[in-house]
Amino acid sequence: MPSRFLRRFLAAALAIVLSGAAVHAAEREPDMCLVPPGAQPALPAKLLEGQGVTNMPVTTTSEQAQAFFNQGVSQLHSFWATEAERSFLQAAMLDPSMAMAYWGIAVAAAGEHRPSFQLLRPPSQGGRIAADPAKAAGGPPNGPPNGQVARTVNGAAIDGKIRAREAIETAMTMRKQVTRREQLYIEAQWARSNPAARTPDEDYIKGLRKIVAAFPADDEAKSFLGLTLLYGYEQPAKNPRAGTLEGIRILEDIVARNDDDFGSHHYLIHAYEGSKTPEKAWHSCERYPQLVPNIPHALHMPGHIYAQSDRIDDAIKSFTAAGANELSWLNADLLYPNGHHGHNIHFLIHSLNLEGRYADSMLQVENLLSFRETPRERAGDSQRVPWRQGYFTLVKTLVRFERWSDILDGRTIPLYDRPEQRAWRAWALAHAQSATGRQKDARRSMEELRAANAEMKKTPVPLETAFLEISGVIEARAGNRERGWELLRMAADKEESMVYTEPPAYPRPVVEGWGHVALELGDFATADRAYAEALQIEPGGGRAYIGRARALAALGKMQESESMLQKARVAWNNSDVPVPDMQALRLVKAASR
Image 1 (tube, rainbow, N blue to C red):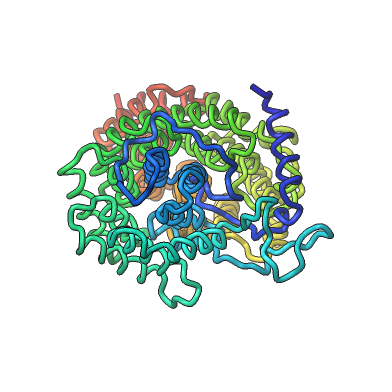
Image 2 (cartoon, helix red, strand yellow):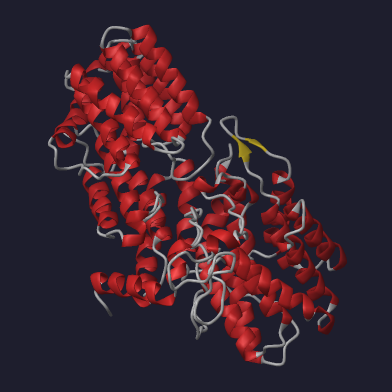
């Protein structure tokens, strides 16, 4: 097995050899809750254990091709796009006349087989990016001329959207050779890939409804339809968007009849994430990884629900298991994408933060920072590569645990000359300086944050929020409490307006930090309200429980304070809380006697 350094070196070198044009392919910001499609995966594929069991008979002359097709569908159900495409390619190699193999390639390569609420996000938050032959075309001397599609040495388009369209076009030429059911699958995917379509997603849904109407026993089509109807929830009210409840009904009907339908269990987890009732997915969270024990995403997804429903320890177990499984794939495949692993460890750090486990959080930060950026990552703007997620989680952890001396030592947060990293570093410095009485320095850091934001083509909403938040903190500590609270309310509202992502795009709820400052300044009623709001955003957050317990004790509400303190003890049962937090707990205990 190659070392981590050698693995990354070889992967980078091989990526360059494959095609100089690939470096100039359209930049993607995939949703990191899946392994996104990249260049066409290499063959051969292998039949793997633990992928989930699918039986979807299609027209073929080869039993082996059918086996690889079934595996590809299983991998689609777990959003494992690269491996699904590899399995479908293997099926097509074994039986070149197998129309549904090309259908599968199209679904996998397009990267659109996921909940509709993910596709609706802006590209910077993992939303859909259309195929762009001009951007996919090469620019370097050895690349294709402008206007041509950039391809690898085997002729496959580098842009997955283009590759998907070419595959479904092939399937369309073969559709007279297959059953009516297969024809409808192919036509539905063509409707979504058709470059002339005005409403491709709506056309795709219509195509899926045709399959369900004609073949009411086809649970594969029903689960695809249920997934596509998941438009999510309006934030912050968490009211379901049109289509979401129908999607849930379809998926729940499937699992009620067949508790082994792992795809529907997976989709139900997505159906309830970000909702008012994440606990409704608990059974699917238990069942899905039992049925699919060897795909990282299947081990990871339950953690989303657990993190939202005050089961933080279970979230940590999910993300830990997923991380270990994904490392086995990273070590086995030189070209395996590392973005999903970065996302998983990021969410693990977030959950460890909530449990008060500072040392373990920092160990996982080091894990992410060990994935050194490749030259392409270094030159790009993606904030979702593992090293940059590591930088963000470093800032997040240090601020959340109020490690002011570490932030101020000039070493713990390295200076990295990219505007996003400079902005988050300035935000952390301003918090540390303000908290330690260095208000002039805090204002200078706030201006550094403003300057870094101005360098970006479009300032991300989290960094707009960061500027408002630190402005409010500084104003409040300077004695302008009314203005400070006004700015903090604006920051909290802007945070609430962000597109739903997990883990959250902001380091920790604005209202949690607001509670800390209000508590420090003796505004206990404001602190209580802020911490209560923080607990609505992050149920089970130990810091908010402790802060609210202190605020309630100061307000003379001893019984309520003791209740909060008990919840804090449960939330931080495994914590290694820093000394200030231990002192806070002792103060509350003394006040509640």
